[in-house]
Length: 467
Image (cartoon, rainbow, N blue to C red):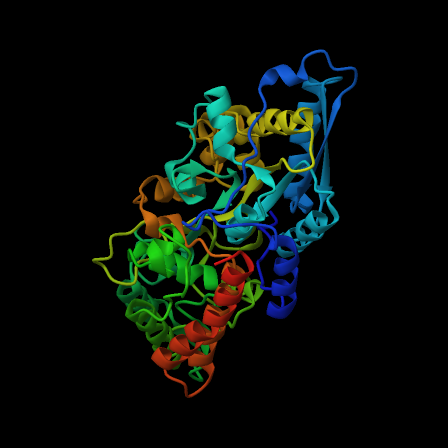
């Protein structure tokens, strides 16, 4: 199974130049929301059509995930022949898709429907091109209760749902069940916090006769999403103003003592030969686990299928760990959501896009989507579908992600930071983290320097939208 595309920041100068062009006409509503006056048309606009409404759908799903999505598109088109026709268009990874969308806004030629990753939420609101998801919910009295609360929480801003969750995931702790059993550990009770990971790693780390480590207890990539997850589970905001939800974010807070503690722990694990040093390449982190070089790792739910297929040992899964045992927990999501463009589009196109989104969110579609890709079933009723049920029976590890999300506390910390330059912030967090692991710079100084370095980028973005 192909995992979700990895997010990496684009060059700051180029980004801000583009943002300045795209957002020059946009204004802020004073609370970090931005937005537009576009509203959802009713179903009557599709009455008496002479020909099918054309809906172009830009997305970032390729390989297996793309095939599953194409199958859903084909099914929808067959059900709506002569009424609505959806054409899927792969736009590259998430960053590339967002860049294409920015260019399309400048040219006045956006797709009717677009998949945008979580880090692009604030930009999408500020660009004022889309019809807020809440408008469709209100127009149709659409029932959102089956949609996972944690997902609604993430994409709700100032009380309004802004986009529709679709291809979403959470990170998990993965364990080599065979290695756990050989070490006398219970793979059904994987470590729950950093102290427990170290304790298990001391038993899981194996050396040969020469003292060379042949199996490390732990190993995971230096990936900024993990910092966001650790902070959410510790009830610590990633950025100020209640994670940018009570006003524009003006600074990042990933130099918090909890994250300094995490980075120091990581450094000590490597120094003590209990963890393999991976670096920022997530492919290397996955390979360390599937090859048996690391007995525990952290990765997205989207990697579970690949882990099972590529490993010659039994793969186990547990909740993403806490920094400290007394952290309250929670879970922050990754992946992307669906945005319906309104500016420059006819009511028929807008309504046709919404009809397709509703189809994608049905329990039937979500069962197919979850089973075929490993993404969460954003409509929780999808887990009861035949495809999802069969997969759960074959691979019970998939239920861990759903349970983790269902157990998540719903608050501004697990909602995630709303900030127009989240992509740059994530990269900066990785760079600070890596600097602490590979140089003489202390964890506290490295994370503080990284956080300070984002401040100017945030200020320039906020200036571009009128703050």
